[in-house]
Length: 83
Image 1 (cartoon, helix red, strand yellow):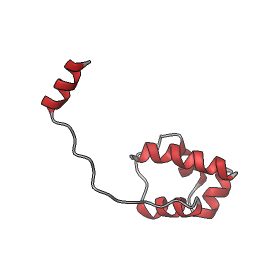
Image 2 (tube, rainbow, N blue to C red):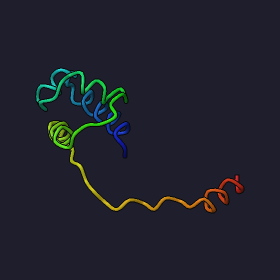
Image 3 (cartoon, rainbow, N blue to C red):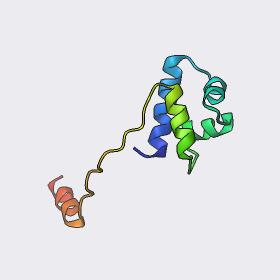
């Protein structure tokens, strides 16, 4: 999941919980404009502390796990030829 996917997730959970953007921003201690940029995929960077506070208010957690290995070029080409 990247920051853009995170923004979509935050928006979905915020709406499901019935929070306005301003209410969530206030509870998490972030600017409303920052939250808006995150949700609208226009925020290139967001500090760890802000991410954790937003997720905590939404009753979500950040989990770190090993990444799936990226495919090699030969694997991508092979998969393209199968289609």
